[in-house]
Image 1: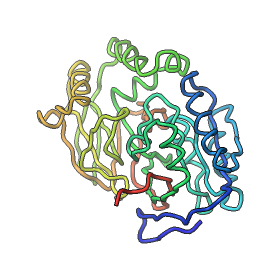
Image 2 (image 1 turned 180 degrees about the vertical axis):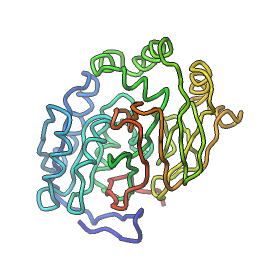
Image 3 (image 1 turned 135 degrees about the vertical axis):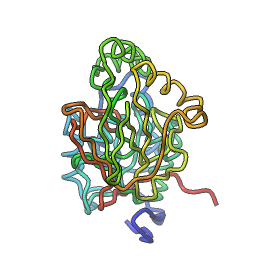
Image 4 (image 1 turned 90 degrees about the vertical axis):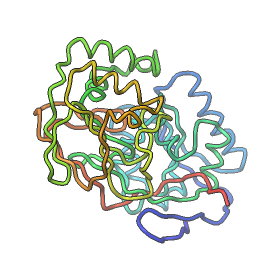
Length: 310
């Protein structure tokens, strides 16, 4: 599949093709509304004469295995149909021979889809897959586990750690708020011992971003661009759990940074030294525990993104 190779974070548009082979890695554990979105996207692709092969995941790790075994000879596009957790699973299996990854967002937050400008409209999702403007993105990694958007240690990781899949499926985004209140009752908010590019600092909660968005459409790191390598660190100052929660409430309305209630700066590497055993979430799933090292992968992943406006 031709593309322009102008750097590790750039791509290009492939020439129009007919009868594309699209292999779809599908996580069926979605609500009825999201399954309807999935079927609508498939119908649009097949109406255009394209072949869709569906591989259904049954457990964690299946998406990575499907991606790992798929090369450009098997499919023109490898579409991941699921939420941010399914995408995170899938990118663990990506390699140099993997076809461009497309997104069919079916999750609760769909942070990467919003970051790329894909959204959740079936027509826009299908158009993005078929236009296949390809962007090369270097994912982050925490203890070797890749992430596309962000990783967090502190309150958000504690919430994700306590949240069951069944609760998230039943209540959607409201499940996170319910779990926050449960977490605040028992979490003591111990300070994190952190080193960013070798400089020691303490924080109540730490978020390391590759893109702008957090939790869906909310902008946390406005200076970030997925196309650029590097990390962006958001440090919540040491304090109690209610203080941390109050700061999180300011993210959706854009006041966290405007009021100076968190510190942000770029970084090449981040090391979490303690408290030992604390959970670390990446793209909405627990993927590691402290101690941990966070950096950017050298090997990029090719993503299908909307064709840029000219």
